[in-house]
Image 1: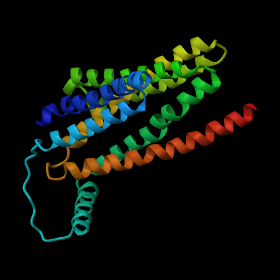
Image 2: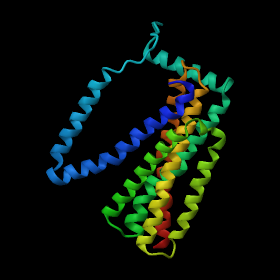
Image 3: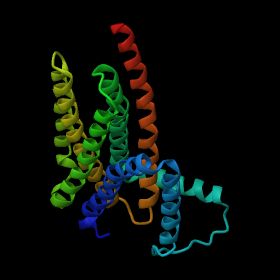
Image 4: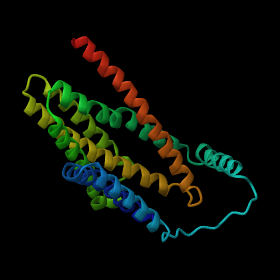
Length: 254
């Protein structure tokens, strides 16, 4: 992908992921409700098979390396090469990786853990309400990807603080949940979730495109893999943290 189209490319990937998150549960629930679990499993198997076949026709240009080293030796050498690059040539990318990891640790984990607790236990609303909330959040992620594609090069790291500010405003807006009815609280919670997911998509696309632009082509895969690994490992840690906090808060209320 040309350097000036990296934001667009990442936005398309984000949109595809968000669209599948939006349509997958909806279609799955409709098929499951109408025909049971067997057609769902059959359809999923067919989709996996079709994906495997389609990947046979994806050709990514590359230059094979014939070093004679084992897989583990190659992996160790690749990690050492990317680590040296990050420490000596682009130390700011390490800060970006830390920032994305903190984003996953504090915000993504909060949405995953707190939403079902707030909707089902605190507001005492049913599964239908929770499904609507999850659909709105998936739509927010899709909207963020579309916005990233429209803004394109205007999305820069220097302006990424605006998305973090919007996330903070939404979280503060959740204070409106106190003292209102269940339906009104659900509306505020769902609206905040929509905006948070849109901002998360914008932030992720911006950071990923910037890191790809600042990394040599031979190291892009290794550096992005490091980013995804560290940031994804941060999310379950955040989920465990919020799980303990919510349990403590529930115990204090009791």
